[in-house]
Every structure is written in C-alpha cells, then in structure tokens.
Image (cartoon, rainbow, N blue to C red; front, side):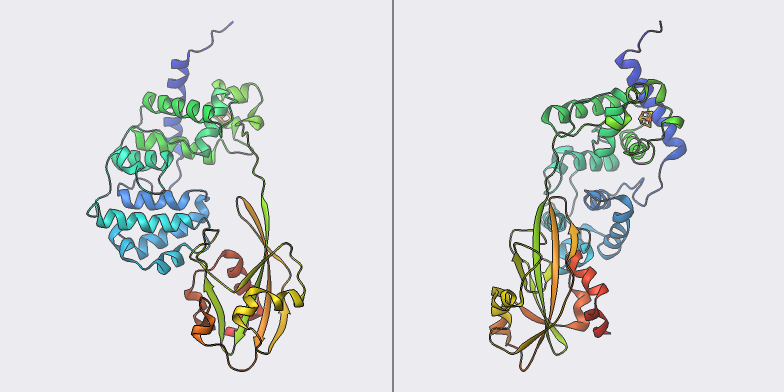
Length: 371
Ligand code: SF4
C-alpha cells in the first residue's frame, strides 16, 4: 500500500504545482504586478465584496480621477461618492476618502510600509493588509479570501467552518505555511492561490479533471468538492420597503441627502417613506411625513405609481415604489424645504444615487421627460 505523503511533502507539492500553474495560466488584470501601494490599496478596497468584472471599471475610474493619494484626499466627498456610485457598501467609499486624508495630512502622503502600519488604516482588515504588504513590499503575509478558503479546504479536506473563530485561525495558519513553502515570492504566491481559486477551483464546477493538484486533493479523492468549504451561518435577509415621492416642480425635482447611520449614507434620494409593506394607499402617502414636509397643503397630483422594484443587499432585501407627483403652483422655498432641496432635472446625473434609484431614472418616463 502506498504511504500517505507527510504534511510537509504535501505543502511542497501544493506550492510547487501552484507555481507551475500560475506561470502558465494567471489572469491579466490592470493592478497585477503593480508596486504602488496606493493603487493596490484602491484595487483591494474596490474588490472587497465585489466581483472582479464589476470592480474593474471602478478601479479604472478612480485611477483616472484620483491618480495619487493626495488627489483623492483633496477631492470633495460628493465626487468620491459619484465615482463609487452603483458599487454598493458605501461605507467603503467613506473609509477610503477618510484614509486618503489621513495619509495625506498625518503621514505626509507616505503610505505605511509595515504590516502593522497598513493594518492600522481604517477599513483595512487582515486580508487587505496582507495583500497590500505582499504586493507592494513582498512582506511574507498570506492572503485568505473566499478563493483561498475554498482551495485550502478542498485540497486539505478541512470541514471546519470558514466563518468560525477556529476555522479562521486554522486556515490562516495553513495559508502562512503554504506561503513559506512556496518557491514564489509572497506577491506571486498570493496572486497564484487567489487566481487558482477564482478560475480553476471554482465554487461550482471546479476543473478537477485537468487539475495539477487532483492526485493529492482530499475533496477530489473523496468526491466531496461540492461539500467544501463549510459555512456555519446562513444570512437571514431583512425586508424593507421604501415609497419614494418623486415630487416634480416645473423642471426641478425634490431630493435630499441621506445622512443617518443606515444603508446608502451620503447618497441622494427622493423624499422616502419607509413602510411595513410594498402596498400603501394614496391617503397614507398624502399623510406621510415626507409629503407633509415637501408638499404640505399645496395642490399636487399623483400622476404615476411604479410597480415595486427590488434590490438585494447582503443583509437586506429592498423593495421600492416610486410615486410620481406633480406639484401645482409655486414650489416651497429653500428654507421651507430643508433638509430637502430642489435640483434641476438636467443635473440629476451629477448626484450619486443608490442603484435602485439609478435603475428607476434609467428606465422610467421621468428620465425620458428630461431629455
Ligand atoms: S482537484 Fe478539484 S477540488 Fe481539488 S484543488 Fe483541483 S479543482 Fe479544486
């Protein structure tokens, strides 16, 4: 009976095969081989919870609009939010901007060069710190993202949940050992394992039949690829319903900036009523706080009601209904309206909106009336 390879031998096999695979198959991406820590940081923050294809145009835009950390630090917040519009998880954009200011003002524009210094930046967790440290400075820290968890759990046959404290530690240790055993420098080894997970050992239909690791891959040998990795918690989504009042006053429309600690902070929206369901009567809408604040007793006609539109966030399912309202007579003054305000319809593209409002503006007759 053949002897089982030792852990050390498997580590060497894993790292060597990964190196050979990487030299033939790695994905060309604009930030690959980049040594500018600022640009690496940008790409990493943009790619957190975002697919590469979706994040790419945002990275290109940020690099063009804000080529240096100083440019990003000096930019007005609305411009940063506009550059981020549609990418979701808007706290990342706010952290990005705050961190750029911190680097520009407190660190004299110099990006930190140690793991601890990078890790201390707002919005930077262990994964991002390892990625920036290894890509920019070849610091020997292994990245552990969803791709890495998948490859390691399948190859080693580890069923410890990846979202448990024990699992996080176990996978981080293993990832570090694989990095130290690798003939590649830290930047390339980290890139190799992430690319391998993203394009070869994919969540569904991994390419096991053509896999250089298959002879020693526990999941493949035991036919468990569809059972690994294991996640302990299932996210339960909260349902929320927004009724947007699209109040038209001549060629202007009422908006406000979301400032509360909630989703979409610092983005713009129409006056919104959050309601227990997607259905609301005209009477309920007319008596609602946003109607009272923006229209009050002025004569106004409800012209159209959209069917509910849906947007899925990680923890919430949003349904939005748009009420198109025509305000007759003189609009309220700026003081009467505050914190709402009137914006020219032709300038709506200057504002950063949540995706669900962008869809509505892109789809709806409101938009057609503007051009
Ligand atoms: S054999 Fe299959 S499951 Fe194992 S590492 Fe290769 S692609 Fe992943």
